[in-house]
Image (cartoon, rainbow, N blue to C red; front, side, top):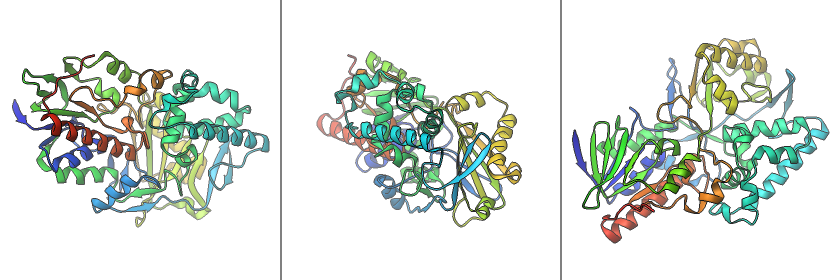
Length: 462
């Protein structure tokens, strides 16, 4: 068993943990402990046999995500815009309709219904302060309501609701019944607006990173060198008699003065704290379950759908693949179609034989783009709910009642234990940008505490 002594231990080598380490390493000795054999967390690359690299985890950056663009530049990487030319497709009752823009052409009554509901949702979201959503005058009312309940009251046509729900799945990787209305409004507000989160050009899906977003994490880890330790699943954080902390992992221990937990909330619950963290913290983490998502990508010899004047973007209430994108990399010959299985559909197909799941996905691709889409050169999917050290994606949902019961203390430190990760962001919650914001806050907290007290603080247990 090895024993290391550092000033700061960071649990989790996703983009948030790695950024916190980069910020702190300039002045302090740090150690990043990662359970997996790779860095990146919910960012993950897959390489096809022809050498093409594709993101099977988080991948997009867009306007307003200034931290991400700065990081990309710092690391010597570059971006290109997601393909967004030509007609999008709407699949209704097995029939395909072409359209342009974010909202498809449907019958006037349903279109008006959807537009009114979207405008009402956006107005409500705009009224919220994302740094303190619990303070809004209607916060308790909205937090006691599910998004599903609100949707049924505010979207009167079946088709309008179905299309709104397609957007909910695409943004949250969950169902309207899973979400507190207040959380849905906060989430949209933290990313500027729901329209921003749904849009490609000018929106959250605008740009991709050459080499994949996991490649950014690999570059960050290379900068940190031996400060990053893989295959080191943290099991316990124990306070020593002198006030320091021992962080036990599967291959040794690290003694430190401060700990940053940069994990999805459901994974933070795996760690044993001695003395225990406050009961409210444990309760909060339990009320932040992850979304459900399977990301599916098929590779073809070329993006043949472009020849038909199609963008590769599809919306389909029926599914099981309800949203698709042209994921082809600029400068490469291959055509990549990407689709999502989300929410209840992802939960179902997580328990289905992989070949059966593949067939269901390719059936959808063929329905949208013709029989040629049924025969890809290669296919890959990533079931994030089955990923051992993640167990869900894209991010945590806050169940009804959580924001108003626990929100004021969510980002609070627990003695020398600090919290990072996208779930602890006020801006771009659920996105890489949010992960970087949370990393900055946690790093500032740690630096301030070490400067004031040399880090010898006791765990808060009440």
